[in-house]
Image 1 (tube, rainbow, N blue to C red):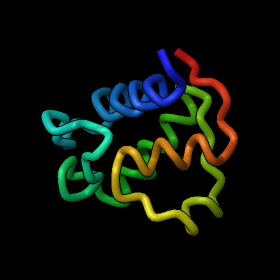
Image 2: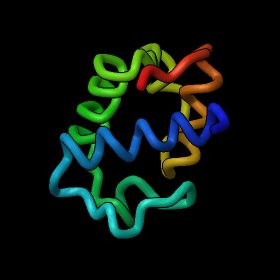
Image 3: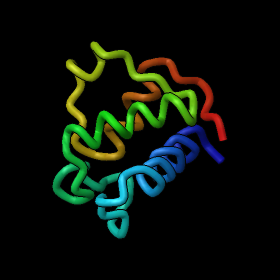
Length: 89
């Protein structure tokens, strides 16, 4: 499985386990975090915290301020761009 697929799987797992109000029925790389998945800014921070704690994926605070996160694909790209080399199972 590619790194992107592992990262996407980790994102989906965290949403499924910790964000019960998100609309997972439309989950895909192109799914918009807010418009499609109903993930607001607080839920996005929860998602990032759980990705770090459970999967070892880190997003520096300054990266959150400088990157536009609109889709799952944007979040994946940010995780890769900030040097995450492995996704913990």
